[in-house]
Length: 600
Image (cartoon, rainbow, N blue to C red; front, side, top):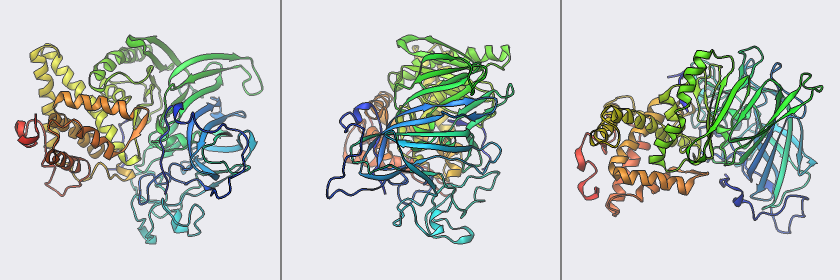
């Protein structure tokens, strides 16, 4: 993601991946009797760790979602999901479950642009299930989901809640704020956004089970902890056009129920039925478009668009924009199909200018593959919508650009995300800096490439020198800044989760230093190995650092310790005024900045 507007300055987590992860599980079907001695319980109501304060309400334990089928039935003039609208999940129980939860925001403090959704029915393996909506509680609450203490269900940016109620407990949810006061809802009750489902009988550990949730109403946007919005943006050019979806970090829950946590990555299938003049755009590959005759829901006829992701997709990368779109595609090198979608209401001149930039995606992908390794998906694409969303986003294989236009700087950033954030996803919200920093490197590499081209090209000696000089100058300029060091990238609050300084620039600059620490070739090999080892899954900070450590020029205990200090200084340390990391990088300390005993 690249934000353009910022309004204000106990569970075991398993990672979903390919179908191989559950191929050995028992077949879905009837609920077999629970073996004597087995303990059945509720699935954990969050995947955040105890003490977490960045979206601590998100995620659900006790099961893994392996495949999600999105069956939207959406009428664009009324902006409503109609009867027949549903989401179906194929899950695997990781414990014996009496009940389990999902994340679904039916209502929002934003009464105008927020959702207004109603659950109509829930089935588990085809049988009716009961459901209720409850408030979240703080991660690790020993009293569980139904803690009778109101203080266990309160919102805050930080831990403990504090505020006028002097609540000593950790926050149960992130505030949804408007305007500039991010603490306006500190200590306020959390909304009941946890959809708790009770099947007809307990589900045994290892069983596959299907959940189908039918719901209707208006999709909408989520209010974030920094005062911005994300989710399903209403498109009104022309009137009643449809919706434009860009949803980081949690806005998907404002138009569909899901396990709303980055490390949960099911495959997706989309079968979206819309008015006959509209187009539905989703992740992956467009398999078919089926036309339907007029009926009571669509008096003028409808069309069903069938998309298949072909790869696991994280919660915030699920795309589903619907409206008047010009959609084309072509197959590029290496067999990758590129989709290009633009709002039909844009002027011919704007469409032409946008298309000129969009057509560079093949070239951008080829260039970034030199560092990251082969492109990880079979498709790539862009959708340009008209709503003025406050950010562009790396929706997996279908990058979103808001406001009707695209630019090359941001394009390089978001396409870099297809490796970093999309293929290899952050394990938790606090790891957002990992992938935003790497996407920022995508911008730095783009600028270095331009410098090399001006000096004769990247294959010429002068061009290679200009390429490295550009990266060195970028590092030096950033390192000289006084604004990068106050907050640690790995310890954000919701209000700072997308901070330009601590989430984008500082970790991006750290990667430039690390490239010099390891050597350019070793750094690139480390990137490719991370893609190989964690592609289709997610990565923690210790895992990330261990991967880079593997590529030390000299693998000694002293060098490992020195690299550990580097990561601590750059990722985990908040500095007082005038202080900054002492282990730096190119252009400042020369070739021995890391210590002569550890360099190549």
